[in-house]
Structure formats: C-alpha cells, structure tokens
Length: 140
Length: 107
Image (cartoon, rainbow over all chains, first blue to last red; front, top):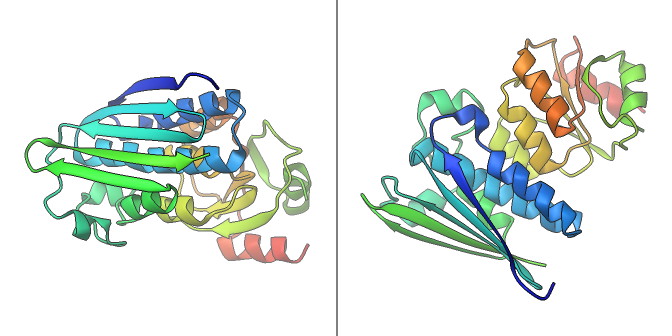
C-alpha cells in the first residue's frame, strides 16, 4: 500500500437504530483491502462504540479513517457538549447516557473502555460546549 | 459444529441464514450490547433476549458465527431484514438462554 487510503463519513445523530452504518461500511472496505480479521474486528468495535457515543451524546459528527502501511487511524469528531472530566468518563461503568439508550443495551459505561482496549493508541481532546475529538490508532 | 448443524440439533427457527456452514467455535450469552461487543469472540454462538436492530450491528462488529434469540423473544421484521442485508445468521428458540448454552455445551 504505497499511498494512504482515506474514508470520510457523516454520522447521523437523529437515528439511534441506524448507528453503526459508517462502521459497517468501514468493515467492508477493510475486508476489500485484505487486512487481517483481528485488525478489522478491533477497528470495527472501536469505531462502532465511538459512533454510538456521538449519536447518544453529540447529535452525530464525522468519522475519518486513514489506512496506512503500518496503521489504521480513526478520527471521530463532534460538536457536542464536550466531556468535562475525561478520566471519569474513561472509568468502566461510568455513564451519562439517558434511560432510553440503556433500555436498548447501551449506556453501560463500557464504550470508551472498549475503544481503548481495542486500539493501540487513543487520545481524547474535548472542550465543554465546543465538542470532542477522539483519535484512535490500530497498528497493523 | 456449523450453524446449520446447531439449527437442526436445537430445532431453531430460522430468521436469516446466509452462512449456514459458518463454524461455531465458542458460546457467549449476554444482553448488554456494549459488554457483548467487548467480550464475545469471533466465531461465537451469541445467545440473547435483546431484539432491537442494534443487535445486528453488534453481531457484525464482533463477528459472531450466529445470533440465537432465546425464549422466543419477539422481534420486528426490520431486524430480520437488517440481518439478511448484513449477512448475519439469526435464529430463534423457545428455550431459555441457560438451556441453549447447556445444550450447546453438551455437544
């Protein structure tokens, strides 16, 4: 792979049921690039959790995926309320998700920990009232 | 054991079966989708009573071999359609989650 391959997606914030469409697309595209199933799985899970977070908390956002020779970088960006205390948000079980989301089987405070566990690097930049950008790297 | 063999063994109702020959390499039971996504392994038989459309997306991401809905939990046509579109094996049983796992363990 001489040149980086880039994908861009807009994540719709209105429909919780359609959350994951960008992740499904990425999974298909990574398969076409013949990456290992384990790498594809890690990227898919991390990106899906991030996508759900943007739908739950930020009324959607954008996802940019870059595939390079040795790594896949996922950048999720939103203009949502921001995260005041990132360390607290990273704790497994801590959640601010509303009840309707919990009844669907999400909002258990597992999203960010799952994202960290499935990636080799993860960085969260957030400003309250402005938005959040999560950058994740999976090494190939 | 393949998904088709499991279907016969447990007399499962077929809702979507695009990959009947997919091999089942493990079992995972759970309803909390984020937890399942973090813990289920690729190739697992996933047993759940959760039936919203996000179940299909989780099955895709976690790359499970099939989803078995326990206790004949009701699910919408939209979920079945989504499973077909995404190539997910989706089956259903009147048995409880425990009974399905128990049967599966006694292969």
